Image (cartoon, rainbow, N blue to C red; front, side, top):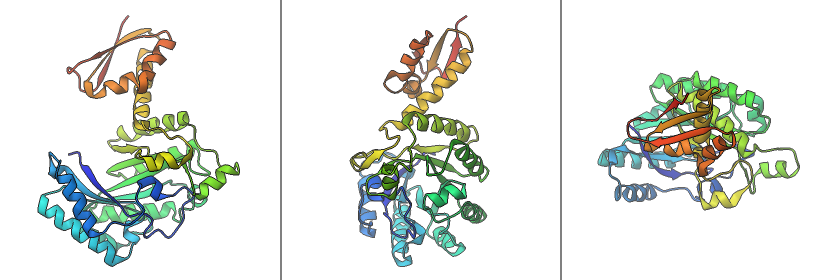
Length: 328
């Protein structure tokens, strides 16, 4: 079942470290922490236009949810648990740091009906984590994943591309290490330089070079293939677009349709591989995947034309995804 999130952001509360890239106010557009009353209001608003309430989950993102003061954390969880039971919602999702999950806290999460814990893994390279100011190690991620697995609590992994000191080789190794933990889902975030962060100073001093958009799209497309062929869904690629984020980005691979560009590149590479020396083909595609075949702003169509290839796109309900038919 695919869930929709009733998202509430708990910005910076509980964070014991200043990551070089982080400004959660700009990322989320939220500057003050939510109250139990805010949780009730968000759920009521979502239910007012929800067709399938049982597919909605309450999600606490941002900060380090399991590191906030316990009375506040439990007040949010208690309200969320009551609303889940009252309205038959899908569950409760939280995100937190890998080094903030002692066994006692995991038992509390279970007691309040939390159904998913997302870990801010970011990288499995200790050097990259240190340069990024994360304050935790790859071993912390392994321990957190093990505790969650032992408790039978599903977890997701959040990864970042283009961190200080990182490289494609380190990111590929991170993906392999994370896949070996069998997460329920993954999010991929290419690093952006935001106003007012320590990363801005490094960038202005010439000590940090962000990924280009083309680099980020290609790396993300590769990771989408890697995880999804292993049955691990990537539920987000790129930060959620919004005015706060758009106004705060100074440099880096920002694009409002980042995921679409990645999906388009995946399809383009697949079609070129299947052509394998041929110059013409027909691509039968379901309406749901048509934009991926065409590409963002017809990128794929233009790319094929520039290569002198004749690719005919036929939208049909006869296929679930897309099918490439070679013309001899």
